[in-house]
Amino acid sequence: MSSSSISCAHRARSPGAGTAGARHTRRAAILSLVALASCGFAPIHGPGGSARSLRGRIAVLAPADEEGAALVRRLEDRLGTPRDSDFVLAAQIRIDETAVGFLSGAEISRFNVEGQVDWQLTDNASATVATGRERGFTSYSATSTTVATTSARRDARRRLMVILADLIATSVLTRDS
Image (cartoon, rainbow, N blue to C red):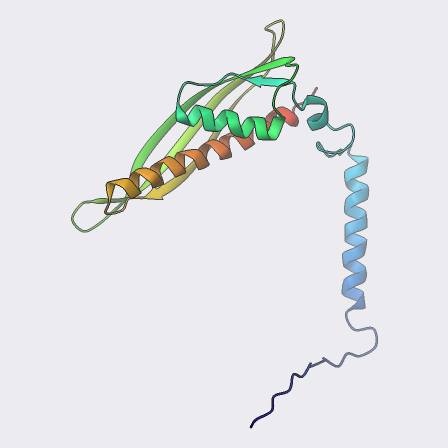
């Protein structure tokens, strides 16, 4: 019968070893916070931040396809489901697919999916508050079955809409008021 034991190895340290590095790290962190505070940094999700004041106040016009629905769903996750909408966000989505990987028999094995959204935020009086253009990309692999390739394609397009919606939400929330 064999016995096993668990041992803990401790490194021998000389007094004060590693404290200089820790002191510099703390000093750098404190100086970073002071620098952020002095430049007017305020977290958008903190008390009084722009995210809180806009939450649930932006209605997103739904484009008429699956990708548009995914974009709206993610924007509502980030900006809140509209209750009393003071603003309307309209978006035009463009998606292009490019074959980028090929097998020996000239079969396509991978696709890049590139997307662009031109968006416009207007107030209730239809005055433009902000506009922007966001771009992103993702990719998917083509497989030997049509069902798997179709599923991968749809998933890639959904991922792309999440990327683009996050970029739009960030642009809206960080715009200068």
